[in-house]
Image (cartoon, rainbow, N blue to C red; front, side, top):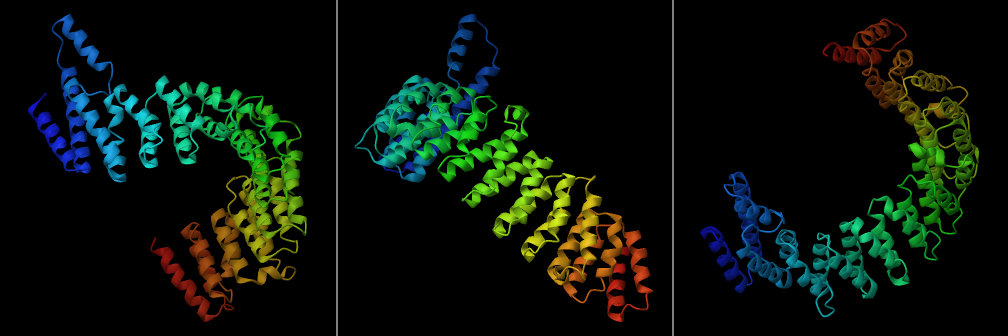
Length: 468
């Protein structure tokens, strides 16, 4: 043991007698770093004899364990003292030490975890640490706790530890599925192990009487491309619990975006259309998103029917409008244009205009710009256009789309009576080529019909363009 390590160890032991647990943890971290540095130096030195090579390889078999074996028992004892007697912060810091101390730390940690007389927080930290040891005895110890302990928080941390261990814990978690008291914890742990091996055990609980279990299982299964899963999701669309229907809708939407979409039923749009009229608003909104992801004409038809219904609540109508906007399908834009002629609220009209302005497809952007311009010119037939907020939204949308056909309508908005509308028009015009805009603004300045006030504003704007 080096002099430095000996001094650190002695300081840590003195600090432990003084209950200075933060300093003990600090010394332990320094000892670990010193041992890691020593290990690196040892690996750099060439072996000069076969027996030396074997000794060196033996030390490296446990890469996280300290290189100086004399330190091992002392460091483990000090770390366990911090864990038992330290405050929350000290315990939080010492957690990082244990994985470096090797498998000898497992037995005392399991003993703490299973000690029903120990304080809950101490047992909680022991469970957290054990999740970093992928060993059969750890898996069994954690499973025994979930299977027998009534404290929900402890069971949860044990389940999370099992999930952290990963594939080697799956078989043990399957046994927990057989008990009503531990089934939910097991499902949640399995859900965090992103491996196809969890599919079979989760399929056994998709019809469980507990809706929380059904929900968790369906949410986890939705992440896998497996032909057994879509029928389960379709069945769950009719579940009595809205939370389960919600996960089924989300899962089918995710499936439709992946290469495994051919596993889905041909009548998927019809199935999701039914959920657009669900009693639960969140389910309806997720059905909108799922249909948006499918993105075909049938999906657009289903969404527009919701807009046309006088019984559709405004939040759902707004979600549908946004879904049609993101769909990038010509039919979807046709429906948004038609929706502008319906007796809808200002909030919905604003959402339609914003959605049209956010169209990203270069093929559809000219169409979207035409729709906005036509609506802007419909002042006599649609009273909504008289609202300044609607004009502002149109100006913003035309600027985002960046189509040259929008320059003239935006220029006309510079003469609007509302100052905010004019400012939005100026901001939108800045999205275009400054030289072309300058020529257009110069034409406006030469128009005798334009007031001095507007001329002044345009002149200021031209100065701004010329400075770029």
